[in-house]
Image (cartoon, rainbow, N blue to C red; front, side):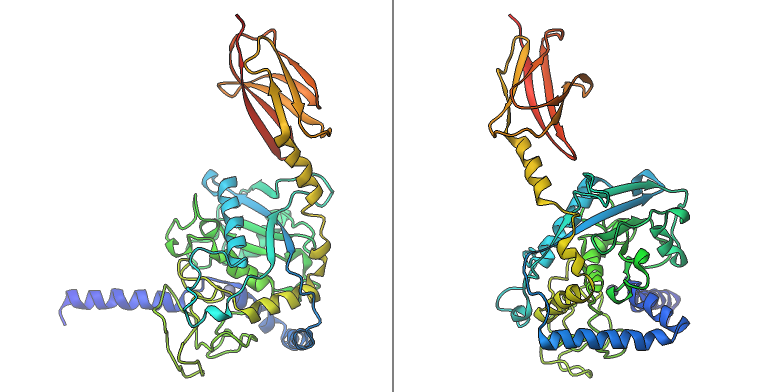
Length: 422
Ligand SMILES: [Zn+2]
């Protein structure tokens, strides 16, 4: 073997080793560390699993299909590039609703052998619109930190204001997701605290995700994480948040406590070809391993399904551990309806020779704040709280194009107006 071939072989071996050793998700590793530090936890977790299995056997859990989970996204950034945009955050919420709603574009074809196991979960995700004190919110917090990177041993520090991160919102009413600059020298994309730890460590409950594995735009998929470009790290980690395990059960041919996922010997990476390892040594069927399941380690482009039994397990978990989500005030329909009313505002006349008449076609008073902005984006007039039938006097302004912004909480409507005196 000449030196050139030897070098290529070494490079290939390194690549394969990297994939084998790749730990995209830190959830199970953290859990194993906790158990090794405190061995009595093993039995506690097993007892809790028995309770869950009993609930599943009895089918004594809420089977409702309109569960809304309010999310608060905590952006913790050092560099401006890590302070990801609202659009990137919204793209992540869309992915969650597509994946959990089984409306994802890459779902299996009906002719696929695994299609019959797929279903919509009935779980929906919304950015919170009401914070823990009852005030309006965008569901996004932004915290500038001195910490330029979060090392593996510090991932959970991001959940605490005292350590350079930000404290959680009540984890029984909100799903907290911290998005931060996790150490690039690790392959970890994210981690979750499983729900059976909620009562012991409520302040830790939630997800930590690297910003390059969050959403489908902006920094998603950058900095050497091209396989994490479609927001499915968060889909996977929320699976853990609802008590799902990796489909290989975190050990050779392990048990994921779900009946309709195929037995798998270990994690799969990238995008294998179906069928993968048919009739494997763990006892899979001729269809092989379910590498496209969200709870495997395949690339984002390759993942596309939760199974019916995984969904049942998530629902039972909500009943057992996360039932307060069902009555959470974090996402208020009333507030949405109130903000929807903004769309009924109209301006007359337009163009105007000096005074605009603001009115709403719905007979209501939502106390919106109205400002006039010029074409450069500068606020030139503030009218304060405007209601129906409000006169906006602009006699003192020169002719031109302006924008009237009607703002209510985190929502706004902008109307283009023209001042044109003869
Ligand atoms: Zn995982």
